[in-house]
Length: 508
Image (cartoon, helix red, strand yellow):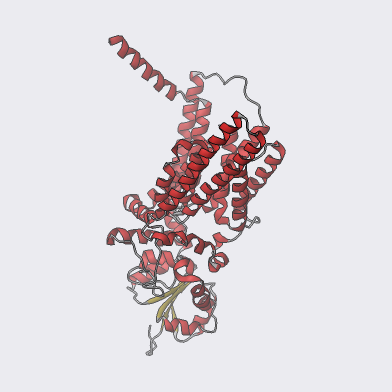
């Protein structure tokens, strides 16, 4: 009895000792993923973050998901598909627990988890896979931030991981789809991924059956592939049904397509533009794209139909819109690693010998890296207020709050979310980043007509009884307001200019 207990204790101590032995390989992986957390930790600068945060607060305080717009004066009561409600509740819950630092760090961890799932699908671990993963991470980095879109990246990565390496857990996909459809409208990507796998494997099975003929082996292969195809088809159907489990019901089936076909979003929102390869931040994507194509051509290894469809489809989407680059990256990175690993077969004859001295040195390196990473993360978090004042009209909003301003406000599109966070419910915005709520016609014929100082800008401001106009100094309308006796400039700085309508007595 005592001997058995002693053996168990020795076994546990042996496992602990093995775990604590920090080999060079383990050190490399620890530094890799810690570095990814540091890279992904950044100040909050996304214009839409603020209205997401306010929406989460609204849902928690009212215990209801809004179905009409409560935030704007131009679309008050207009139907609103609050498709990201769960992500917004998550954002506000984190904010109440740890404010902006906890938000930044949590989303950095979510991004790193996304990349960890990509890494798990790669051959050539750890060094080749790490190099490719860093290239993919750098190509994705311009879109990172505290935003619901990060949930789509994480769940898309999880879908790909399960479809490629854990087919016995396909039953998880419908459950994940229920979560996904309430976090972000990118859930449609999950359906597309499953459909591509189903189509690709069905075609490949048909080709194999024709090639192998009617031998016993071919019949077993055909039976297995039919079973896999049936499983994927059933999972796809269940995922389609899972989409209904959201507050907006069947409306979510068409919402993603309305977003993708919005003329105004494609024309005026920067992240929907095609990547500009003259800009440094898009160079890693170019290298990832061309490296994948070159490696496939040089390796001579044939891609499966599924891989080809994913690469071509998502590559086209990424070239059409920078917003889709991260999705291409999580698909392309394992394929690139596979092709390069096929080209480079060299292996060490034997693993390097582990000594106590090397373990101590590795631990010292890791501790120093952890300290440096922590310092970097703290510096980023402490810089949040500076970023806020550099990108948003923080001082102008302070002025409005100090003077207890009330009335209708016309504002720059990109500032709408920030104004909702700072001024609602005292003031309602003219427009904000919810382009789907306002629609193409309103953005082009109303908002931009005023912003550009078009022929009808006065009539539109009168129609909505606008009392205040808050714009960046370079906005075309600013020059018109400066010359108009009905408007008086009451605040200005390098970031923003604030005008107030003058009453008949000549006073604001």
